[in-house]
Image (cartoon, rainbow, N blue to C red):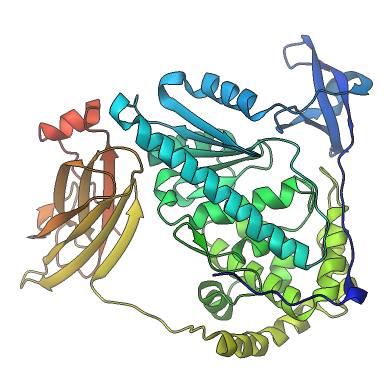
Length: 494
């Protein structure tokens, strides 16, 4: 479904263009071990005792200023091509576990958990091309929105990389290494865009709905088309607000920033710990697992409200943000002042206007904020599995009978799955599926969740949670499972 945007009156039109410097320099850098190296890079920011050097693959390195011994200004180096990017990524991940495809500005890479048998190469290629098609669709809907605001953009300087990790374990390991454990925990992240590497990184299971790739791809578009500078003090609420404004259905994108989001609208109205003043003044709420839910809901609500009700000021504010440079620092007062000067009202006053505007728009767009819950029913997506589980009934001793279905969300090959349902009473049920073809749905026959977990005190149960482990059938783990060597869940007390 295409989203219709309001036409912006000419008096409100402003052209925003942030063109990168055409020059790069050669830096003499003293490394931590005392050695001197020559680095060809573009200086994109200075501050906090650091210099931000942009390499020819789009990566930004932070170098302490005292370690820059000399800077020789000159042209180049030119950004690398898509083929060159694939060559570098293949060297990093290994030719036996990496497949890639390039299309226009995009490089789609698939990081495998195990070497891929020849008969599955065609499916891997289809997965890569599907990813490229999706990224180009994201580009189109993003530019439709930006062009409607009469905002000028740049073409990406570097190949835009999407890395798809076949297994959650490899994704989380890579995420921990790349983020250094900062921000949300790797287990809570389905995908992310890195401002340092300029790459979009996701789990393969997210290619089923493309919800996370869509969100992160909007970030990549925002920072590669001149709207915002990477690693600048542009507030997180703005970048997250514009990204949450786009929603998809499978590989289709059926929403835009003018569309009311049932999910985020409901979250914003129910938020109690964080408010608009908090996220406008500071980014801290986005960095922890506990407060992030409310912070993201407010990010959507602020962005939606401003772009729909304060269009002229929104464009002026974006122009201001586009001028903020890499490594620049803004304190809370500056952020609040920037916001309130342009929008002409206090943050809290704007938040008080939001509920009525949201309610009116939701009625016009036929959007409901009602809850749809089913007791005893669970839908989970993890480790390449989509699991629908139902607790059918509870026995006299408090042990539930559970069962359901599992879909293999792999795009390329059969997988083995070990599924457990763990109850709050310290018992569990278990299913082993040795070989499930891509996209195939398998039954999880009903059984009583009465096996004791390690360290369990026993007792009746009221709730349950689903966990899934995944392995390639011919891997060491897959073969161990086929021999009946299953790990026993450990009771954690909750």
